[in-house]
Image 1 (cartoon, rainbow over the protein chains, first blue to last red):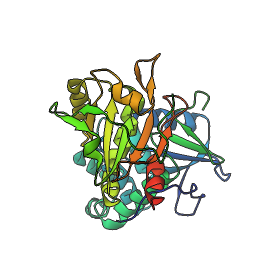
Image 2 (tube, chains in turn yellow, green; image 1 turned 180 degrees about the vertical axis):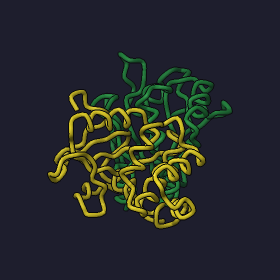
Image 3 (tube, helix red, strand yellow; image 1 turned 180 degrees about the horizontal axis):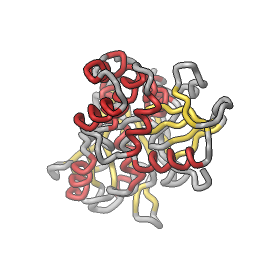
Image 4 (cartoon, rainbow over the protein chains, first blue to last red; image 1 turned 45 degrees about the vertical axis):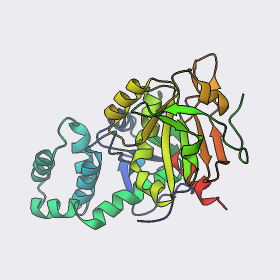
Length: 162
Length: 154
């Protein structure tokens, strides 16, 4: 890892992005969030209640939320077995339980190959996937979670009317 | 009052490190320093800002920059704040005489008795290379702004 993290435009929606929600339209909302952040969980609830569609990008900050990186990698590892959205929902459903045994428990409950899940979540590829999201957020000016980009406009925190 | 501009020699000042020793203009010489002025320890917004800088601290180090947090909180309050955040970024106190260094750098908000949210990058020669000041304390400067300034160095 080398070089700086200078300003760069928000990467546009791409096939590698995780699109969540119930709508079928192209999402206008890109959310930078982490799984240990209570405000992110609140935003998640409001987005689901509003039948929104959004793209989710990881923004874990270790000193703020020590288990956020591990949880992000767990979601990506589940994604390699086709269950990103389910793991994503399971992580937000119980933020008080994000230690390794809790992640394995979720993987088992989702019917994942737990051994593969555990290897994948520690793999360089998965770590790089999470880091790519995080760095794209830093370069676009994200400081805190959650941060939303609606049609490219940055908004930090949970919008009251979301 | 506004933050010191690029091209201005850093003023003479004295801040206190965690062990109460002095941190002065002499300590800036020979390396690139970023002073991160923030309003108060333990406020939520300040917390997010320093947490993010800590997350990318190795990248700042790769770019040859050393960051310090600066506020008018006491040394003891800053130490507790740093421990609570779990960060390694050293904190410098402008406690007594309160705000003297912040005033010298043009970032003291008299009505609030606190620094404005500001960043000052000083080169190895002791001259300010770049500075930033928020319109109000709620405006958070992203780490990208510091990396931009580091990349723009001659």
